[in-house]
Length: 91
Ligand SMILES: [Cu+2]
Image (cartoon, rainbow, N blue to C red):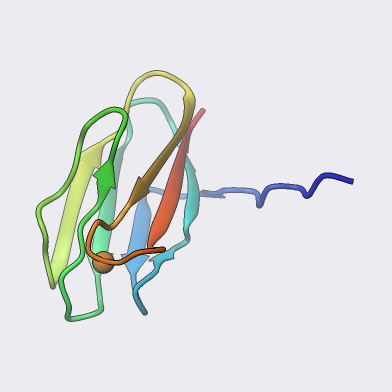
C-alpha cells in the first residue's frame, strides 16, 4: 500500500528551528507571500530550484518570497544544510 503524503498545513508562516523547516509542508493560495522566520541563530536560506527564487542567507529575523501563481507543489531547501527541505503546495 503506498504511503500517504502528509497533509500540508495551511499557513504562510514557516519557522526555521533546529535546522529544520516547521511546518515542512505548507499549502498556500496562488501568488501568496510566504514568510520564513529564523529562530536558530545560525544562517539559513530558502532556495527554490523551479522557479528560481531564493532568500539571502540570514541568521535572524524574517525573509519573504512570493509564491508562483500556477498551482503545483514546489520544493525548496536550505543550501547550507543537507536534509533541510520543505515544500509549498500552491492550490
Ligand atoms: Cu540551513
